[in-house]
Length: 252
Image 1 (cartoon, rainbow, N blue to C red):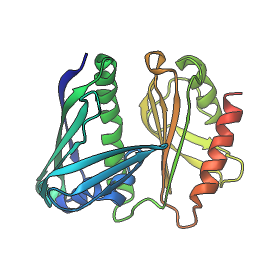
Image 2 (cartoon, rainbow, N blue to C red):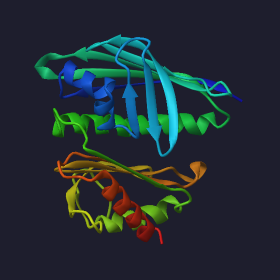
Image 3 (cartoon, rainbow, N blue to C red):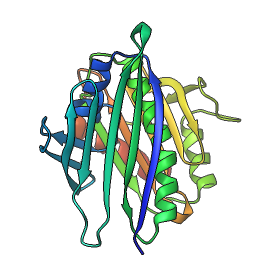
């Protein structure tokens, strides 16, 4: 049975309201920290399009006040489910900004699992937004790498393999050094910037934000990669092929 919901989040960002607006209300900005690809018609009543791994979601902009408020509402599914997102931007002294978001709508039959995933997911993605604004200001992603494997294995099994590949050992903590060789790509060296196991692991390098996500048993034990690359010489198709081959070897 469908279920109405609402959740809210708040984060203080080391960026100006204008920088935050560009990151949350433009397609290239959103692509630099959020999953998938987003297109936005920049006006109230404009249409939006979100694409991820072959799926497409359409939406309508419901509020457009540059530097202050951006909101949109997805089209309803045949079952009546939809999502609405409302961002409020408040500038603070010293060049910082408080971003508040309220997400609401109607979830499907598995609403409890979906609601929990939304809350945990926003914690990780808002952290990614903060990392993007702090470490890649004025830039937008030059490559988005997405890959997924359903039924990858239970969390302990998958994270053991993944952290081993990243040369991580012991308790995973923010700031831990990471090294990874992906055949066909430059060597990756960075640090853990988000330690959210058993669901999320984030790695930041000098030219990218790498995200590893495990859905958990209730959502099919899928392993999802969502990387945002900022180097000038990235070839998106080559990178995606290399990461898919890496996943095949990791989960063999």
